Image (cartoon, rainbow over all chains, first blue to last red; front, side, top):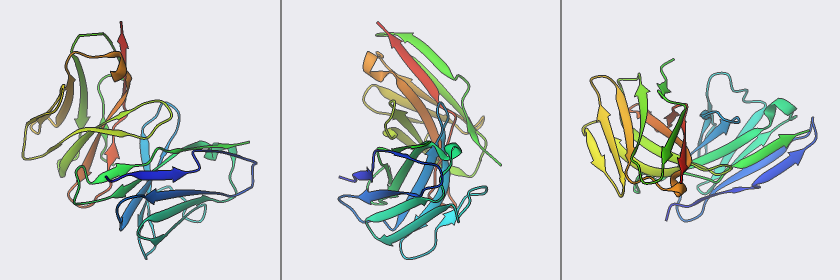
Length: 116
Length: 112
């Protein structure tokens, strides 16, 4: 149980376009989901906390107008990278919180974004 | 701000040997610690966790040790296998929220 999926797994887009990444909790409801970004050979950095039915909380330095987060249901959170540029190329990973199952936070497989 | 860090960025061990991966944390308010394994191109995979009221926890071939006095966390892998080759991250959670703060990571390479 507590499986999290992401779609797409890989995406290549042109500079200036927008890309939407989906994060789904498949067998549980998640009131809280998290979005992380990971550059090559670096650690996961928290971008934002997504709460169902309310605005996301962004970490310092993360532009909320560039990284739009929507958590409209208990099983789906989306991250939209608007006007993507090559420096946005990264591995985006989401996680979902299920407090009744250890370790309470479950990670998706990640989405590799490449902006040309 | 406060962060979680690792002493060794890379670790190479021979198959069958024991591995020890270390992590230093600086947030004394952290109450929960997790070790993750990440293979190339994949999301983090849970290995083992420990709460701040414990100093040792064992799993299958893995042991996590927590020393709150010096804010140090370690992961011990017994009889390391080639399939253990990956990047290992420690992560901490403060008691003020649910988000995780990840350390820099250690790349473990198991040679035959």
